[in-house]
Image 1: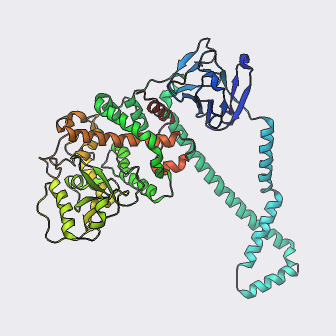
Image 2: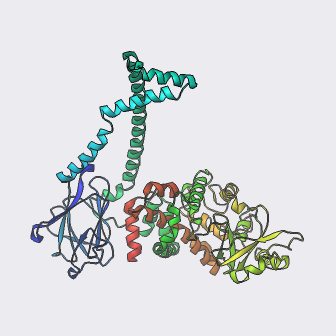
Image 3: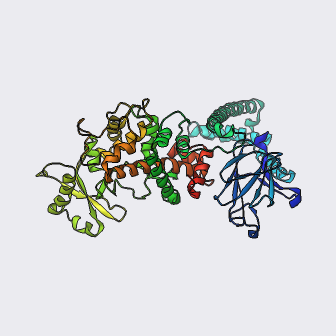
Length: 553
């Protein structure tokens, strides 16, 4: 069976015919740095530290990926006489061969084969040890243990005494008791075997279903008979988000809205080098990762929010900060440092204009936090009044109870009025957002009527931070119906640029972070999926990763 075969790379006869392998992992790296490569080549050949990666997919499917645009590779397909130069991840199969740097450079033939006999023998030996644990003798010992357990743990003290006498007298070895014990033990073993078999079958079915779904998603790549698919960046975004190419949605919207597409590209390039700051997302046992997973599932489970928006929206909570509290801060649409609150990091003005029940807050720089910790109402009122003025609210209430929230990453703190705030209440917050940016929301296009439906919804979410835009009143909001996002925001000038930038950032997070989990061989895919949901197809992620690193849009 193909899944039992392992990968080998063999130099062509003119280079000595050496066979390297077996390689049982999913990735084989070739280059001049011994510590990072499975096959090390002399640097004087012109190869990079890590020049190329060969990654095995399902069965015999593989991806040959140069690590940089300058990592020259020549590929021979099967028995082709002439090679083609590749500079992007390309599907390959056993029998294909490739050379590094030049056509006359070291040429490797891709092969699949069985493990060497000595490795098989070593594994058989380990298997033999496991088999001994399931031998006739082992079952006999287990049966005897079951009998003893049944005798010793049931009944009052007198029965224990009788049982001891019963054993010492030798009565237990009478045939009828032995037969009874064996019958009982066999029943346990038989029932346990059925249970284990049922569980194994269920796991196998689940695994195969997942493989079939992944294969279907990658079919467009594989059907090219190994030829590279020249995906555009918007098409990559669509594929990673699980949108079928050419079927509308955000991918087509980015094709039409080049300004937004460029902004997403720039934000993705910023995020990629700093993905280590998002590693908390992959800590399935961490409190913050569990909170993110819970938020993602809540949003996905709300039928009023369309699928595409639901896949992107949780990444508002995927900030690079390791801060665990409710508070953070950002530069708002007026370029003022303000507090954000709750898992989606909503500003006071933004949440207020979206119709959430919120308490006023204000940002205090780190140098002034100590003074505000004293709960001086006069000081508190000054910073809180500034926030109210920015939101166009009236006079400050005569009676209020305020305090200073958690320090925000060491940059400052947040003064806020105590009381219920829906930004911190996931259920109420999602329900209200569903009214404002859900399937039936006003001032955004229908999800079936426009390819700009998702970008419009995200745009509306951030436009709510603008002082002149208030979605609590139907006649004072900014409509996004019928236009690309960059067209709607063009008249907003710098505030429109702020909206575009924030929409681009959340889309970039939604594609880069799951892809990095899918590409990184050190990441436990099952644990990552627990937090992030189903990971994107590896082929699109490899292409995205390569393009961002090589800056090839």
